[in-house]
Image 1 (cartoon, one colour):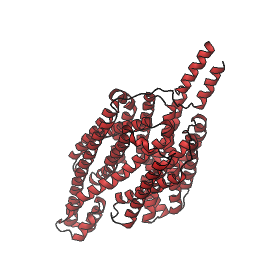
Image 2: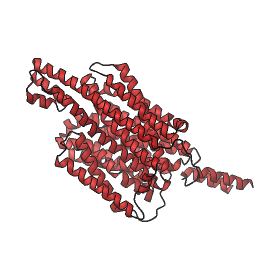
Image 3: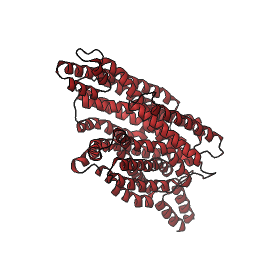
Image 4: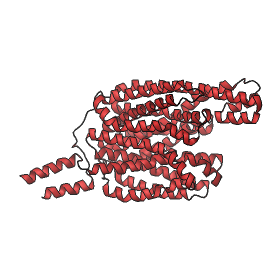
Length: 536
């Protein structure tokens, strides 16, 4: 009797994903995410050193910076659904290996073409790693309350990675050459591969029907075109340029064809019925809106800190750190807030708090107000992370376990698309509000005013060339026009965030915790321990 009771208890614990190893799995997944998040931003501070050493052309330099997020965003759905089919751990470990090889290739690149190819391979590796971390987390933590805590830790690590990238890059560049920002990945990957193979569980979907290879390629090509077009818009390229319109049109056409193909197939690559669930579709929309409203704003804020207030890049990074710390705190407290307030109230209040912080920033002017900025950045980080945490958790919990990889890929793709659209939209708003302020500056020729209207940095260069009272007048007018443009952009961003708060009212009122037993996946050490208890 006791043996039967022990066996039943072991099976229950195994079905619920019990055992300390699931937290070790979380550590491995967080390290994976940290590497990918850091690599997305670590190169930004190394661009001057890369330019001096490799002498890339303007287009080559643009591709060096943009190819990683572009390839990564394009392939998320492909590798997320492939993991559902062939095994998420297998895809993740292959991503580790590719990421390590590509890091070595990038560190040793002796020309721009090799560096671009290496950065593209890093994007492929990142696309293999990112959805796998979330989908494995979905499997290892079948209990929603524990999963909410795990997602909170996961999202806090993502916030740390985005902030640590520029700081780590700056530190390495002070002591080593620019290739060290890539070389640091290799020892971490050499450790992650065997540890991941030992600790991570293998899981996959039901495997019914063939994998839609054509559909996967259509999704990848369509997303590539859309993200490329959006990035060109965000970079200030003409709206009607063939190299902007053509990728957008072809990308949209391929994505429409992909959706129609998935609806017709008996075994679709992505089950679009998930979008019929209000919690899932609303969560995806909230992720897009949150990133659309804030990522472009972050870039503009960095320009304000450096060009208007005159802070150094390191001082700018340090000034933004409170935002990161607040986001970490929200991620760690997210599980408790979700249980207490429910997804609807949590996400909606997070949007409202973020909108309030954005409006608060409109009080900034030409002088440094450190206290106001600190308060606004803390509220901004806490509100944003609260929103994203609630939306990600609701989206992942609403998706069927067999579709976990596809759902995670949809969430990450929404994040990337929202960020790209936000840069394009808010950048356009900023330019529209900034440029008119430079027309008719006394003593400044029309051609100089036109050039200065492209950006604040270019306005400073034109002012330096003019010199004298005309240069001083242009510099003063450009600074005032930028602050005005910043205020307009902040108000537009706040409006988008309020729209997100209204959208979040479609989310469930309470956090519904399912039984932990169904479809759980055991980690290797749990399986061995459970079998030994059963045999006794």
